[in-house]
Length: 43
Image (cartoon, rainbow, N blue to C red; front, side):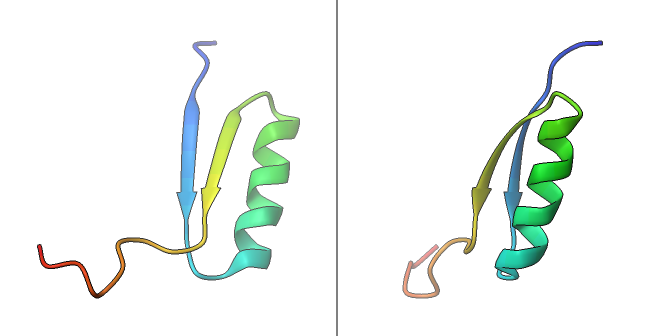
């Protein structure tokens, strides 16, 4: 299987940490962020 790098982004820290743990157990590389782009950024 081709390795994947996964970025999880969500405000629900417990959900992201649980999902990341399960994905890592299956051999995926996982990074987590608990917020997206700050609302103060002018896009």
